[in-house]
Image (cartoon, rainbow, N blue to C red; front, side, top):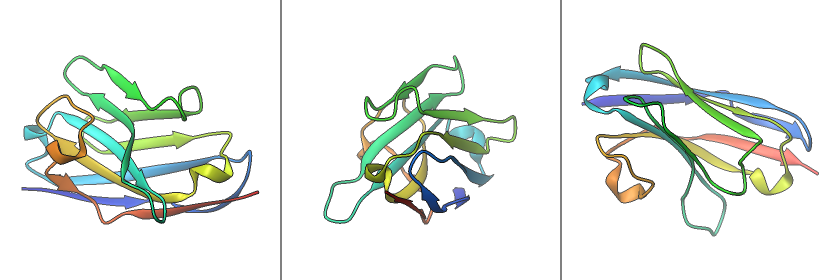
Length: 121
């Protein structure tokens, strides 16, 4: 129903910046919540940021607040601007979409394939 494709990952030095993009297609407007999750080796997938496109509410994990910014354009493409990157930000980053305002990954039924972000210390 909704297809998501991430891009923009890569290798960056600590303190650097990256911008992730998530191209959306299909019935995108049935999913009004966009989010970014990440999963580091041996760890659970965790929410990084979420955005409610109806009222523009946002959520950020405490570990990224003030450094990451989530946004969404009129075509429902989603972005994650990441600044002041830290070694612990290293992970595979996934974009996801839901028709519920939630940070529970189990409530997201549309997922991208993931993009690797590696931060060197």
